[in-house]
Amino acid sequence: MCLRITSVLIAFLLMLCAFIGCGSPTPTETDNESLLELADEVGVNRMMEVIEYLSSPELGGRPTGSPQSAQVEDYLENKLRDIGLDAVGQMGMQGYRQEFQVPPERCFLENPPAPDQPVIAANILGEIPGQASDEMIIITANYDGLGKDVETGDIYPGADYNASGVSSALEIATILSAQDKTPEKTLVFALLGAEECGGYGSQALAEALETRDLKNSVHIINLEGLGAGDGDYMDLWDLKYRKNRPVVKAVDEAASMLDVVLELGGSDPGTSASVFFLYHIPAVTCDWSWFERDEHPDFHLPSDLPERINRTGLLEVTRVVVVATWILGG
Image (cartoon, rainbow, N blue to C red; front, side):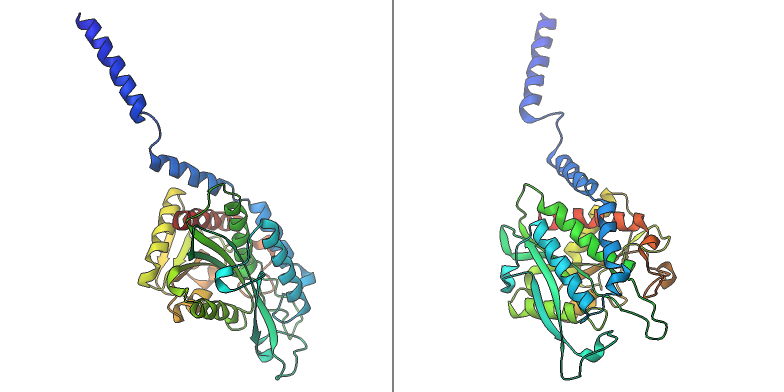
């Protein structure tokens, strides 16, 4: 009799466990698995193709206002279109280009126009629409370069600064646009022009967000210098700005999940995020290993070539940011 009662009790408990989901992954475990799968989709070879193109001698260091810069703008616009991103309607954009003017004397051009003829530069933007279109996570990276050394004629390829950031932003856009789930927040990918000559692209984007009354409903993750040196950690510069805490928390969570060492720094060495900060727009910058500048030995030098890219850094930062972006906006 006791054996029969015990058997019935065990059967009942097994049925109860099956009903309530005992032994199956918890929602947190399931979410973590899907986030890890996102990270595993990051492809270094795809990113290197972008870096090799942007750093090619034919593009002459892609200075703002040059024919090569116009070629890069077309290339990036086609990339966003091929990925399937939409125009950023909240900013009143019909296409992918946000144009703005730059003083010619600030551009690194061999034959600059007259001072009274401003250079027309452009940010290239696209979005993955979210359910809450007035809330945006914006991934930024600048695509312009320094052109050529005026004395030697050597080209500044700009593989690490900042073709690496552009390649990462495009990779993240490619992965997240392919997800079946519509994100809660709109995910915007903004490739900034005219940053190396004075932060004009970030300023144009900040002014557009301010004009459209969007600056209090966005968070920006800026990508710069993701593939240099022999470092083994990722930087996150948050300017110690209170509004950056949600992004810091998400990046920290993603880094922990992926076993990436994260160094949090309050100061900013002069990235695009510091321009957004002046407009009271929350923005952080992600970098690979910048405790001292000698950890980026090719910074703004002709030796900043694709073959010098630290692929581990490029991979790890992109993996962390794609997961953090989905935590924040997905």
